[in-house]
Image 1 (cartoon, rainbow, N blue to C red):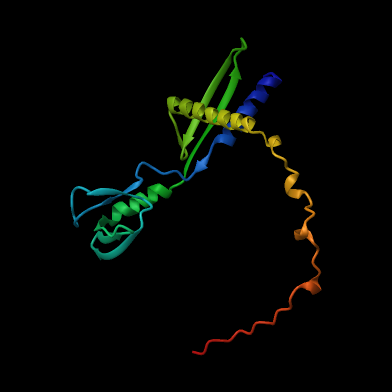
Image 2 (cartoon, rainbow, N blue to C red):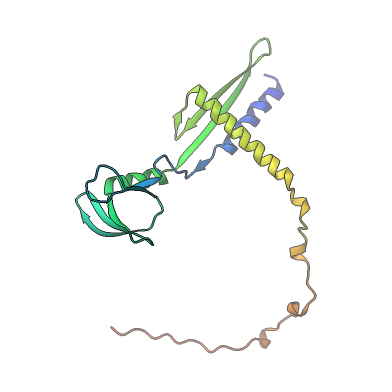
Amino acid sequence: MPHWSRCLVICLGILGLIFSGSCFASSTEESIAFYTHQGAKKASEMLDIHTAIVPIIKQNDWVKVGLQPSGKIGWINISQYKKALQTYYQPQSESFSVTVTRDKNGKANTAIKGYRNGHLLSQKEAQKLYEQMQSQGRDIRISAFDQPFFDYNLITPFRIINSPLSVPIKLNDLPQLEPVQTVEPSL
């Protein structure tokens, strides 16, 4: 295998590792069903996972809650609520690896393997993930060149300011504070 093709495989592998992000992504279940009465078949509305709720009373698998700040009163199924929280806060990870090999004629063969939460993806899903991460990489590079850090004067924050605010203060100039006494609470 020529040296440049090994470098290509290594670079693509590193690129895959860089952009294989682990993020706490919200899942498909981003809302909590809010019912008008206990045991209802249909939810009256779907609440955002971050809605402030105040539990009032628990009965079997249901909790009567009040919504803040609206004050609406309704019911939430405990198992549905727990499932929504678990799926919302479950870490999601996606990664891929790219292997480029050459046959005897020098033709490049590219194999892409993708993983989501540790499970192997189909070739079509892996290709889609690869293209998505490549476009994210391009976006990052483009935005870095749109506003290079050289546009900003990095020395400005470290410039010495000759103003009354930069007058040196001696330790003896500071007011002396009395020591604070702490009192133990009596039981």
